Amino acid sequence: MGARKDLAVTFLCLTQEEVEAFCLEWGIGLRFKPVAPGCDTSIDRCPPGSVALYCHHFEFSNLCHPFSNFVLNVLEYYRVSIGQIHPQGLARVLHFEVLCRASGYDPNLLSFCRFFRLAKSGDWFTFKTSQVDTCLVSSMVTTLGAWKDRFFWVSDDIVPFKMVWRHPDAVLNELEPSTLEINTRFLEIIRECPSRVRPFPEHLLVLLGISELWDRPDRDLVLMKDGQVMSALDFVKSDDTSDVVFGC
Image 1: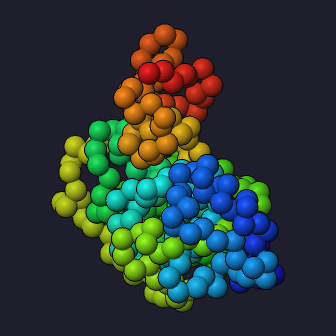
Image 2: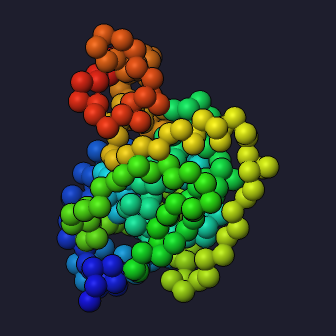
């Protein structure tokens, strides 16, 4: 069986204690009733009243809780459950949000659909570049390591709408919007921002308003390089940020 066709035969490897510890680390309150399914349960067996989440969505894809309105809008529009999305696909969604916020714009569904489209990746759904505009992904990690057996359930009230498990054979026919519907200045800026998709430091996600995992809400974060303030957009576009520090 191919590596991308094993969703229904990949079973959980986490204990209940490990799931709860992961949720606490990533800001998912225990009030959402995180559960480690049985060791003979695959992610597509998520019970009614629950939502399936992969650990790698947080560790690799830059997903944060509470989920941003943009991420929720994407999921609702494409009628796909978050547990069906390949981590690389969700990483592209969050990368677009990061690029927008770093450029000074709020992400929206119309502009996202201009650059990305829903696609299949074996048993999973993903998001790929649309090929109707500039590719915003210069490169990304292609080897993710073990991730398919690290998932858990949470209560479905973690999202504000009824999340459905999209049928794997559903036709992918969403229309891409024309440029007439999108801010022209935004398009000019974002087209100059092809960059590498990768896990970003939590501090950058806090700075951009995507993450709330910040223990000093009374202080503003800044990026510093060689003693000078660095913009979030320059950080995102840079392939080497080893000498960048976060201050407040």
